Image (cartoon, rainbow, N blue to C red; front, top):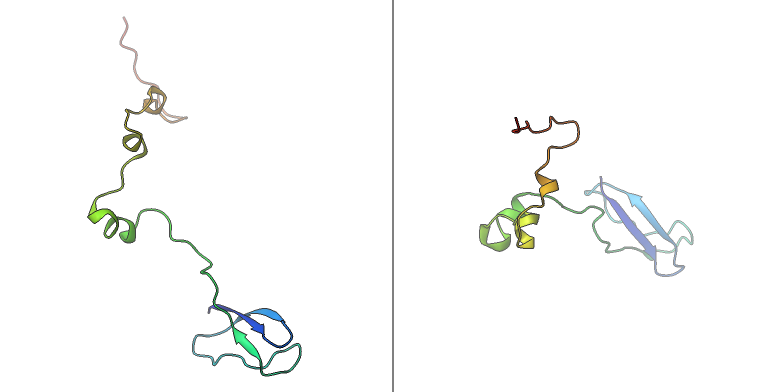
Length: 95
């Protein structure tokens, strides 16, 4: 169920209300009792982030997003080639 922001144009009372989409909008202000309660337009409370169809299929003509090392125009630093912590170190070739 979505949360709607309401504001009374008469007394200025503001309130967020959890309502079904099918419920009719509220009209009566709970603070002053006047029929001046209006639903406000608000920004979405979430943000789409990460890799998804919206980022790969429509942005940039279907080209995959560049990797951070490629975007910088250089090769990855030597530290980035090392195994992650807890991994096995590479075998020694001396000897």
